[in-house]
Image 1 (cartoon, one colour):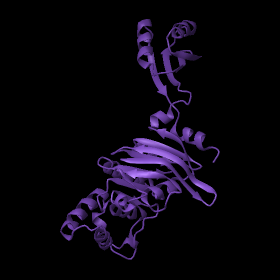
Image 2 (cartoon, helix red, strand yellow; image 1 turned 60 degrees about the vertical axis):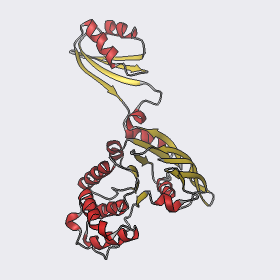
Image 3 (cartoon, helix red, strand yellow; image 1 turned 90 degrees about the vertical axis):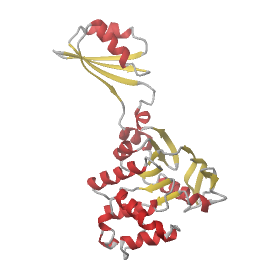
Length: 308
């Protein structure tokens, strides 16, 4: 769907984006995270053709953007951080203006407006002036704008910036609904939003990619180790440690005793919860709790961008 190869952008002698490579398949929701100045917006602007890369390439549906960006733009809907909406127009008039720019036939415009107003939740404000809308509704109108030409790809720059929690939840719900049919790339500072919405997370720092994967993969221990926390009804700790040490794949065992329970922390190279459970069952120990622990996305983000 989208192939980004060695994408680089210099402003003077400063590399805002440096040698980025990404393959984004059709139908994926991908979140781009990073501190201010990481290069997120510059990357999105290069993908949309708003600015030209210093070097590297963007290929969309087999079309090289460097030689045919007009055709590439037909596949892309773009919503910048500040929605580019004329505030002195009615919502209906503004969307009709955009529909005409997109060469949507007049016979299809009403049907398109019904579809977008329901999807983006703006039917009740279609005949209101844009200037009277809350920021949440302006973002919804901006989404309708980006979707007007029925693009295959939707690119959103900080789509929930400045919104309250209820508005964020509403926009997130809309994004997930749109993501059932389209490829979505969006930047955000809200880690919980990326974790709840995205199929894949990319973290940028100082113009470079420093992490790429699902939230679960990124939250895994950097060393590749997994941590399993177990609570048993009190059992002799020496016996427990001896038996667990025989289990292949256990690299470290930590234990803490209380009057009633024995808490165990196991470091393993793989997910061994089934093996651990079977061992506990075989020993006839009483298992009170078992949790496979992972790093929070916030902690991973801080670790990868702390020099920023």
